[in-house]
Image 1 (cartoon, one colour):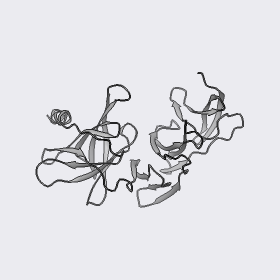
Image 2 (cartoon, helix red, strand yellow):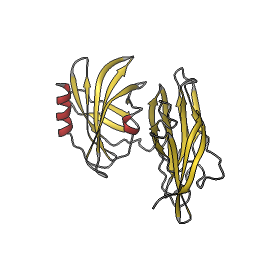
Image 3 (tube, one colour):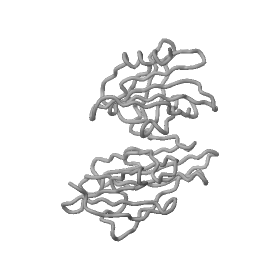
Image 4 (cartoon, one colour):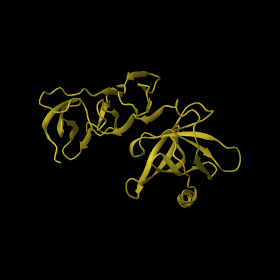
Length: 277
C-alpha cells in the first residue's frame, strides 16, 4: 500500500525549473504546518542524509533501491531510502531526479502512516550551502564552488580538515564521487575539478576509507616516470581486474595509464599507452 501511494505521488508531482544540485531543499506541501528539509546524497544515492531546517542534527538515510529510466541525457533516477533514527527505521523517502531537478519526492512517516508530498524549492542560501555525504558514520562536507575546504566529522566529534586543489578554470565546478577506489569492499570518496589547461578532462583527489582506523586517508599520486599522465586524471575503475585507470590528453593524443594495488594505499603501474581512437 505504501509503495503504491508513493508511486502515485511521484506520478503527479512533476516540477520544472533548473535549480542548484545537492543539497536539494524540499518543502512539504501537505495540509498542516509545512516544513523544510535539505536532502544530501552522492553517487547512486549513497551517503544520504536529511537535515530539517530549524532543527539540530541530521538523520541518516539507508539506501533501499535505485532505478534508472530513459536514455542519456534525459535519464531519470529514482531512489528509495529508509529513514533511520537512533537505529530504528522511522520512515521512507522516495525521490526522482532528472539532471539537477527533482521531478518528484515524497516522505512516508511510520508512526502515524502519513504521506507527505515534497517539492523542490529554491534555496536562498544556495551559494553558501555545503554539499555533503554521510559515509561510514562520518559527515563529509565540501563546496561545489571556490571554497577548497574539505571536512571529515567523525563519530566522537573528531574533525579532520583538508584542502582540495584550487581552480584554474573560469567555470569552477567541483564534483564528489563515492566509489570503492581500492576494491576492499568499503566505499571511498573522491573530488574532481577541470584540468588547468583546456578543461578537457578532470583531475581527482581520492580519499580511501581505512576500516581499521575508521578514518579517511588521501591516496598518494603514483610517481612512475613511465606514466604518460601525471596525477589522477579522468579516473575510472575496472572492477574485474581491480585496476585503477587514468586518462589524459598529451599533445594530439589521448593516453591511458593502468594501475593495480600492491598494498592498501600503494599503486603500481601496469601499462601506459596511447588510447584507442
